[in-house]
Length: 85
Image 1 (cartoon, helix red, strand yellow):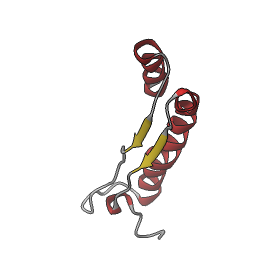
Image 2 (cartoon, helix red, strand yellow):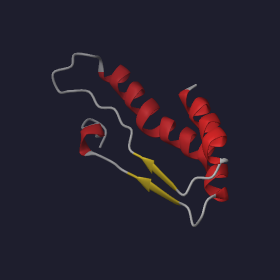
Image 3 (cartoon, helix red, strand yellow):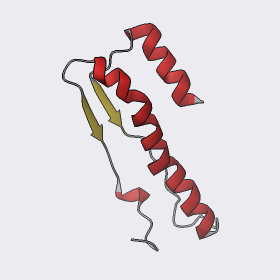
Image 4 (tube, rainbow, N blue to C red):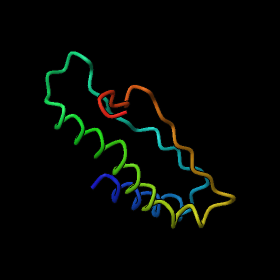
């Protein structure tokens, strides 16, 4: 829902033109968190991977209207799943 609302706002306020998309959102559990690993993995992937992919795909039409548009993906080791990687 927030992705759709953001895109609508970009259309209204900036004529749907975007020059730079910086993907900087992320989520990580703290070591002391007792949430089961399976739940941690699901939540982390939903936000850090699938959320990024969904938002980027929604923004591509706006980036195509922009001037020499770029996508910047910012990552952090805080989102690393030690048990998987």
